[in-house]
Amino acid sequence: MTFDGSSTAGNPTLYSWDFGDTTNGTGQVTNHAYTADGAYIVHLTVTRPGTGPGCNAGVCSSESTKAVIVGNGGAPSRRPTSRPTSPASTSSASSNARGAPGPP
Image (cartoon, rainbow, N blue to C red; front, side, top):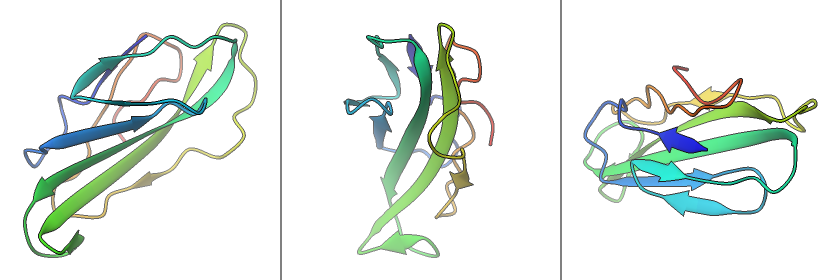
């Protein structure tokens, strides 16, 4: 499954993915293979250097969380949320699964 954070605003320099199955990844575009059908909460955190609201010690970050359904799926264990925390808003991450990360 491909996850794409390339439409994220604010020129992030680091993309950190939590795929909701105890594995993580990095990169603007990354691939992940789930080993079991189910509903997963995918969390993307992007960071960049900067100052202002949502920035701490010269680092700004934004977060986006979405549900991904793999195979027959099921209900995710947490409700998906979107929490921008800096002027650089996280606009999307996409994949080829139903309910994949997209615009918050």
